[in-house]
Image (cartoon, rainbow over all chains, first blue to last red; front, side, top):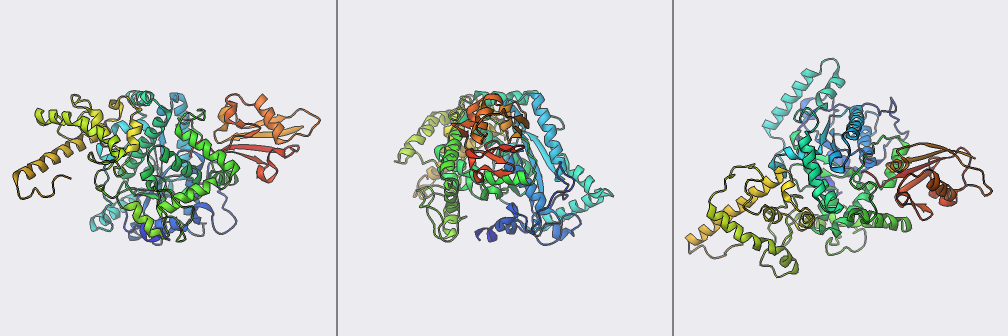
Length: 526
Length: 98
């Protein structure tokens, strides 16, 4: 299968992690009577991709543990992600026939402020969540969405994956392992869980009122539910990646099911994100560089997940979301969900057909080219490697360099001198920018030339244009529904400013070089 | 007829005032009770708000699973399944959460 050679990760860092406690409703988890646990473990691609070499987590020798990757499970409390966490528990259990070999952690993002929940409801939900997380026995991190206001601008940077198996990294892993073993003492498992349970880098208490208000203000200012949902998703992703990077997780698993991905695919097309379908809906999403987002539940429909949860008594927590009780046409997401599900009721192969488009386009399909002929967005392939190249390679005529500020996909906007209608649509922003850059050049170096300058500092320049020109088409369309970009968290505005300054500096240097030497004026500006 | 359990789950309980488990006794009537008439009864008596989010037409909204005694209702004839005494009907909303 395609995934085998691509996703094996030798030499990755190891962290604390204790296997298993039972679920909250039963002291002994019921293992299925058949030898092979269904669901997650049935995905051989996942098993092989995350497999390490021998041993189990608790008492393994450092060199072996060093090879086990750390995986962060993004848990929303909903049925799909709960099912995923449950199956990881099953997979790590000593009873299972084919044990999973990675070290998991769980992250929960409290989005109550964005969804308009009252503080009492949020506290109640959080208490339930903490109880559920503690029973898993994995290291867990409960993070409020308000923490996006304290993220550094580096959260938006795509860093390369660390070189595996370096001597320094190995020594550091051995040191931390020895420290943990020393700290364990007699109550091995419990103390290990407690040691890892609380996030040492997160603020000790709940988010401040100012942050909660800032978040509420941000979401209240967004005009449409569609843009709100996209913004929430973006901020959530950034936060999860930040948690993953901080704690050394190399992979993040999300619980997107087949049905959800089919809906997401159609919604992305409607939102102008057709160029990034492979990243948004494929099995692995590598656009963030050092952290890979993996979707192991994508083979299972929501119906299968619901039945699994019912049959195996998987606990889940229902929290109100942005679109709870919203009417059908409130947002593009809702509309597409209603459309797909209604079609599925009458034509039961709808979801699987849409899903196969995703597989064909992202190389998950078999060599036979499963599924219908794809559109111009997803080109048909008869060989998995062909579509892998289509996914990975940048669009012709586009540099692989600049990435969208928010979604971190390669920018799909045409250059200003493009003759296409798309180019005309997206080129008006750089033209607006020109008088501003001249003003900036005349004013000399910006007063916040250092990194992480205050967002409101350079108000005399147009921060909106500064941000917009660094977004892909889909994100630009969403940002149009946000009247004031200043309400965005500071890390976004700082990074936008930094990239803009860097681009201006590069431009000036380039002009200087060309002006300076007549001989080198051959190719001209790109 | 005592039909004990209507369980809305997975977020659907929000439409029923947050109550997950409803033990109901259906009034006697000439025709035997089936899921179709049960849904009508639920809409009239149990559903507290936003009926269109639960019921569409004479069936449940697409995305809501119905299990009768832990079996998919599609295996039992969907709306035409005739309810027996002490049956347990579970409604799972798959639309909420992820």
